[in-house]
Length: 384
Ligand code: FAD
Image 1: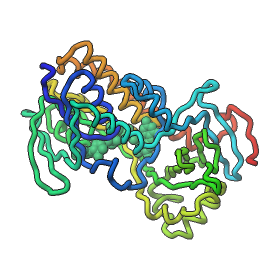
Image 2 (image 1 turned 135 degrees about the horizontal axis):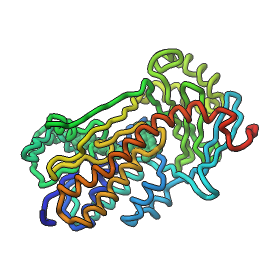
Image 3 (image 1 turned 180 degrees about the horizontal axis):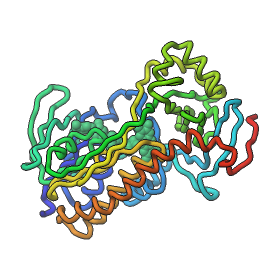
Image 4 (image 1 turned 90 degrees about the vertical axis):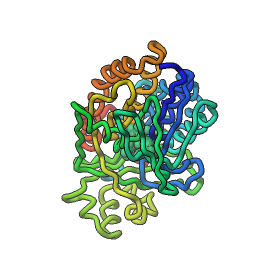
């Protein structure tokens, strides 16, 4: 196909935006359709991974389109894990050699920066509040609903890139095609986001340049720093059993549980019970499927192709890597979508399957083994 082929990216999240930039840079015209309103103007709904750990794979993908330096300015390096035990004692594990770090970035800030860049490209058009309802795979006809008015309309792009996340509607349409393999599995654990606000001087109340973990055997809490002096804590907790989300029903029960289980954190969480009951409880899914493409006309990328649980902090990073790998294949075989997609899915699938399995394993390590004294790389040091 020629460069005048019309490309549509479904989903304007992290991966959809980055992919549109890569495609536009190669001279294609790209339309991005996003279900939500423009998040640069909309009110933020709390509770869904407010910040993310960005690591080397992700940085490389951002570097290729020249925005790594801008994002780095608003990212917080985390040089080590800090483990908090039941008494509030701390122990440490570096993430790498001196100076090496993973970075805490705001999901919204990153998405906004990518949207700004996409909007600045003359060959990218952003369409908000446009929800994919269905894809007719034989013809590439997509039915979209305007979320505000409820009106439906159709488009027929030459190539569809599905970056519409773990519950992809495009993937759902592909599932009706012959020999499409699909599996999903949920953990019996969910997650809830909570906040440690800044201290009196607006400063971070825990070590800023670290990822904090409260490993408790069968469950855990983690905290990542934000630029505004807050920490976003994420409690990974069983849905049922004892203890569990189901078992903690009242503010009194939540407060008592946190004071006993995460005492140093609980002391820094004045809005704990309010947030606990207001913020949603998210579920944790792994999705594997294959093939990711259909006849050189449809391709799944990011979570739509390979959703993983967050314990390696690699879901977004893997999706960003999809974009850079795809772009280099496109440079090698311009317009030959069918062979690009085949090469892409065959190269990427073993890697994303591996990180999916490692991510589930790392949950056991983070919630349990990092608390094991034999596992510690550095001596325990008493807090304050
Ligand atoms: P999404 O971010 O889900 O974006 C999909 C977009 O498509 C959204 O904007 C959505 O509104 C839109 N959309 C959905 N359906 C439709 C539709 N029908 N029509 C139109 N638009 C639609 N990854 C990391 O690398 N590091 C981390 O530290 C990390 N931490 C995480 C913590 C948690 C608690 C969770 C749940 C995930 C974490 N991840 C992390 C994973 C990361 O969030 C995902 O891998 C990443 O968001 C995938 O990006 P995506 O663009 O493919 O999908």
